[in-house]
Length: 242
Image (tube, rainbow, N blue to C red; front, side, top):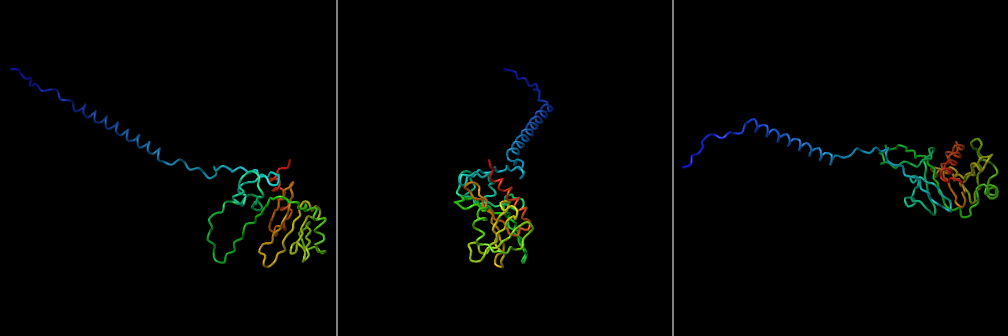
């Protein structure tokens, strides 16, 4: 009959068991931290891009009547015209005196009852085919004199202001020009009237077969030399001769 060995088998050391348990817990904690870090990196939003990092939109080369004009798209008033290439005409607007495109229109702020809100001073520009229109300097010599009054109106220093007679094609307007160099500054301006909130002036500048028409508030005539210089800079920026 077989004899059974009833000697006690050695039991695993309690210290060894505790060491194994601690090792497993440590690996589990490390794994949890790694997974958590990975999920955080996956779902956390990236750093916000500062507004100043917005790339500047390049100017658009636009061809009107065979002439190429370099136009900042923000200055173009009509969305359909914000594209390069040939166009029938373009309509632009600039802030004065910075001669920069107006900033994007913000949300309208509430206005106190009875408060007077001054509109920003702006210059409006239209570029279109000249269609045979005479140069303004030529009109000053051969057309305008037959419609003008004989007596000049009061004007800022260095500026001549002559009114057009009633019953003429330019009724209600004044002819305004640099008395020493009309080609430097020449415009037709509406006369201020009670029903006319803002009288405007119109200056025309032919460039090849294109005609650039600039409209600005008559109130700026008090500093007309600055207006003349600003128009010159604006024309040079829009069309590079050469």
